[in-house]
Image 1: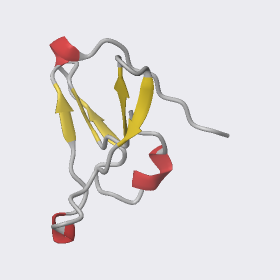
Image 2 (image 1 turned 120 degrees about the vertical axis):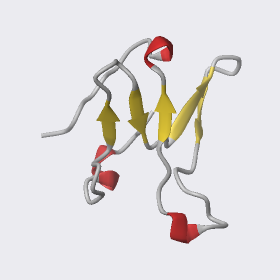
Image 3 (image 1 turned 45 degrees about the vertical axis):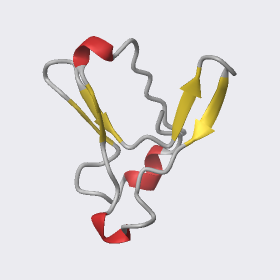
Length: 73
């Protein structure tokens, strides 16, 4: 999940890229743990290498179960 889309609006790619084949590239800020049923905070960048910038996570189309996009007014 990307919890705050606005955090990535200033980047050239925006908050995500929706692929024509159904794949998604996104900045992951939280990951769901099905065992504990909790969201675990993730860092979309490597603090050891800040010059690399934010790192996309690519999710292939066959692994995308659902996409929900919501933005406050």
